Length: 442
Image (cartoon, rainbow, N blue to C red; front, side, top):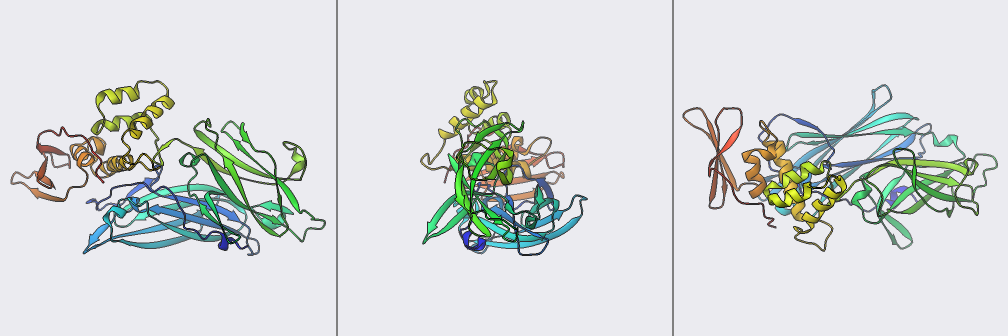
């Protein structure tokens, strides 16, 4: 079965609900993405191109990460994916730009309500060596760049009598009339998945190697932490390898007590044997990839738990925040944080917590658009935006004394800000204070 016949199903991943509206800032903002604005994966395969291997680069952008602008009854967004491949001397040896135009009639969908996304696949043929893969998501409508990178080693598969491709993490596998349809998972963080996941990879048998009569191999996987300690090891699983190219799937169970952190997932192809474990001489081939196990809420990784708790001041009471911040252990703080959001989940029977997504989408937007002498979420405009969301209309004018004011309208409510110093530091003018708390409204 050909590889392209296998990967037919659209890539599935949590889409985070970033409530984006058009920014007034015309300057391009460059951000190294760590928070899941977009995702990419790079998988190495053997190719038919002499002296080169095939590298498949997938990029996934959730609708919630795009900036949509309404025109008539249609919401539109434009973005580009730029892929740069650099060699060990930092020279760009290959690149590609993909331009995408997305249209949507449903405003709710543009805000991530349906967890929609757009995915692209790019194929590169590279000679053996070590490379850096750089993927840039350029939100043309919002005028922002987000960047992710990964190191990649490219092998010459023809040199080996038996070898393995790169590892693709798979969130699900379906069988249809004897064929398997896989759903790639474009993130290194297995903490976003449930109790298990699958991996897909290929094995290559060099039929031109004299005496290469391998018909079966035992596969075994290990999970290794940053200290090179094996924290998880599977039993041997025997598979037939009758062809020059063979497709393989392995299910990997995620231990419930697996600590948060970075790991290396290694898969070994071993000579068949009725024993546990292996010795060096048993190894026919090996492949590996880095993964993470990071706690998430609604699929989103919480990088700084104390900061995330402090940002709850527009929804939580002070006593609730004190309770979450009280433990010295980050793990216990995380557990209390998750408990808080479970109590505020409008759909507790689903994996997604819409209130969590919406709340931190507003925090994210405030940080990107209202930063002044402090972080955007702490400003008066940020506070109003987090509590009430995007205004129905805005009006910015210059007063006779040279100051600027901006009016946000929410139905029958008007909120006025004034920039007293001319540096974009807008302060609440009317009303003088906001006492309301955030409430999720679908």
